[in-house]
Amino acid sequence: AWLASVADERTYRAGEAPFSPGDAADEMFIVLAGAFQIFTVEGGQRLLFGTVRAGQISGLLPFSRMTTFVGAGVVVEDVRVAAVHR
Image (cartoon, rainbow, N blue to C red; front, side, top):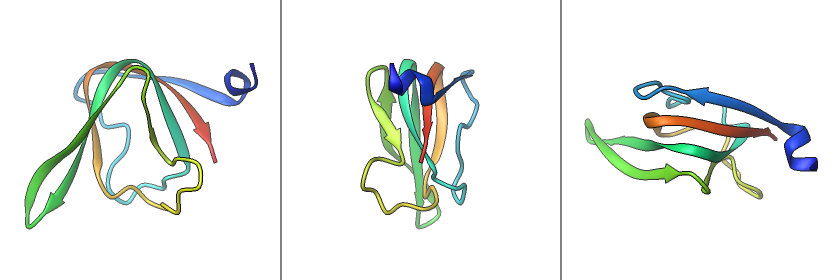
C-alpha cells in the first residue's frame, strides 16, 4: 500500500523515450506491463544494454550512486510503469 501511495503511474507508447542520456536519474521504475530497452553509445555505436520487462525494475535503484542516465530508454512494447521518486 505504501509503495502504491508514493508511486506515479505512467504510460509510454512504443518508440517513446522515457529517459535520455544526461537526464537526472532520480526515480526507480517498476515495470507493470510492456517493455523498454536501454541503449548505450560506445565508440559512436549504439549498443543494446538490456531489455526491462513487466515485473522488473530499472532506473535509480536503492543504494545506487547514479545521478544521471548514461543510456537511452526506448519503449519497444507499450509500457506502464510505477515511478518512485528518490
